[in-house]
Image (cartoon, rainbow, N blue to C red; front, side, top):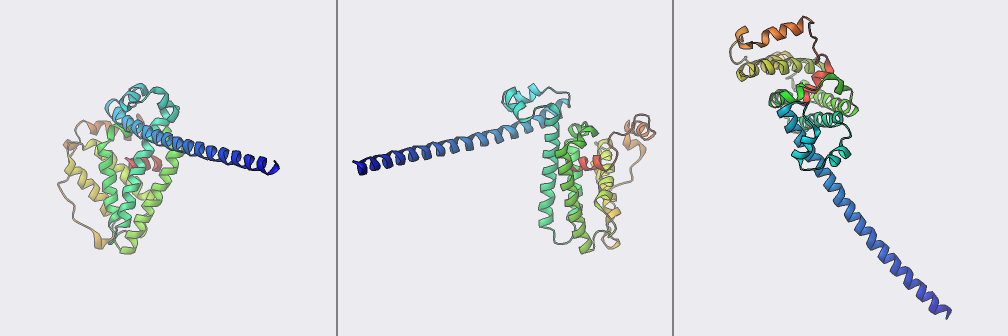
Length: 261
């Protein structure tokens, strides 16, 4: 009798363990699907936010973004509790995309010129999504995720510069903040020279020349711009420079944001 009861108890435990293991596997599968769905929804929301903010500016309602993404408002707020969180996530995503491109250039850099290609890509990104990212105020630059990715961007730029210095294409005294400040000027020029891409390329070539060693200098392309090329932007630029309205994008931090554009 004792042996029989022991066998029955062992059998019941085995069945319980088997059922429990099956349930755990089912739960694990469900959790994986839920995480995958959540990740897809987040990406859809970010893509929709880029489109809607680009079309209507940052005043666009989050409800419109949820509709564009094909999700409910509850899903949106689970991922991004505030509109500021959503905007910051868009900026971070743009900067991370720039970093990914830069790392690819670094891996394939054989002659120390990847940094120049990277700077060109930054400026062209800014042109493509200027209206969205220029509307982001400096208040967002203190966001912890933006600060973290900005640090990654600076570290990558230093790596690209170091590669160029070792190859003899980049001046040895140039640092990442130097380059960020120069790029800020080119990104501002991109706004004013929107209808003259050849002048923008010339401006970018000037930045390249500023950080290049003498043996790597290349001739400037295009013609010298005139006041007429600036059109109505000339007066507005003068007003900002005089301190009448202030430059909300000043400083290395805002230059870093432009790099993510």
